[in-house]
Image 1 (spheres, rainbow, N blue to C red):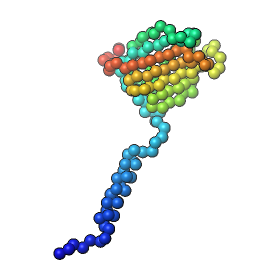
Image 2: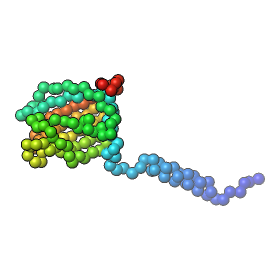
Image 3: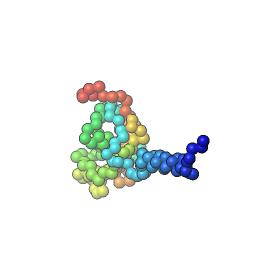
Image 4: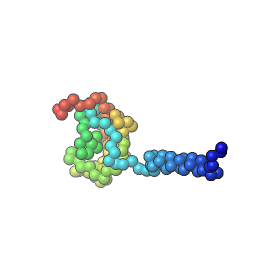
Length: 155
């Protein structure tokens, strides 16, 4: 005895299942767009930060600093706190963020407008490079590398 099936019913079921899978995949992948600025990608922990002041186009002697970075309310502040040689009390403004970079301008008393510019770029959650420029001249170069978790609040 033959079973009675409507022609094409199995094909329609397969087509519906495939369509559903395509819709689910599209929903999971999402639409490409800009990174969420709040999605900070650096890892907290103990960072070795090497800073060089640039004079007359040459990077100076490296200054090492070890710093414990936590997941505070604004972790970018930890990485974007860079000096402008010869100027004190500079204030950061006009920030542009992504999940792996931050660019900003600095206003410093005695420094003519437009002031200074800074930038931090993470190439991984455990390594970054940064710089500060005044006009067209780079005046500070920074490299940071994460080495370990912090072991106490006093690290």
